[in-house]
Image 1 (tube, rainbow, N blue to C red):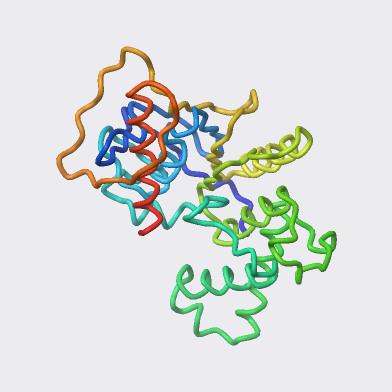
Image 2: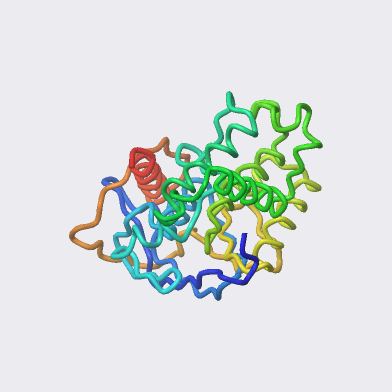
Amino acid sequence: MDSTPHGAAVKAQGLGVKGPRGWAFQDVDITAEPGALIAIEGPSGSGRTCLLLALTGRMKTAAGKARVGGLSLPKKMAAVRAVTALAHVPGVAELDPAFTVAEHLHERALLQRRFGSPVRALLRPRRERRAEAQGRIDAALEAAGLDPETLPKGVRTSVRDLERLEALRLSVALALIGAPRLLAVDDADLKLSDEERAQAWALLRGLAAAGTTVLAVCSQAPEDALVVSTARRPGKPEPEAEADAEPAAEAEPEAGTEKNTKNEEGAADALAEAGRA
């Protein structure tokens, strides 16, 4: 993997995603330089994952404007998807518990070679293609801080037998195989101990320092991250949705105000739509 800084700048103004029953999130502003560590905070159901998916070209926005790596959203969604990668996103980009570490890695390397490489690369001798794939795997594992030798059965370890932090590292490694300009990680600190949380942020901080822009959903952001909140700001009027905005999905509402309930419903609508895409 090329270690030259190649991160994508992220800029958004008044960004919002709306589903049939309300806004998943709205009125989000971001200005981040390439190689930034961006933390998305907000209450459960406030659209954190939807924002992550919108900024990676996997969910169409209904209000505002954004640019990722100089590519405008929502007009250039496919191009944004090509330069971004997802890790640890339930229902969209998640590990198969029945697969081994090796199976996940080789499957991702095969997909990258088949769909993410120039056509001429497929014409090279098999030995060269395999060596390149293994090189991508080794570099991604190193960057993610996952040493297969430390796992119970090495690369033959099943995902179901991984510790939570190990699974996060594997998911990040899989995303890095494609050398994305922006890496988006959902639930970066979910159910981690204080020590594990520190290690997870050290991993993401290191990737950002190496040049990859990192976007991470979390419950508590580190002090050195650029924090973006999806929490609704009191007194803010709801923006008008664009006429061609795509609908989203449905969720179990939490106890709270009517507006909070609508926000959660809109967020789940959007997630369900993204999962079907």
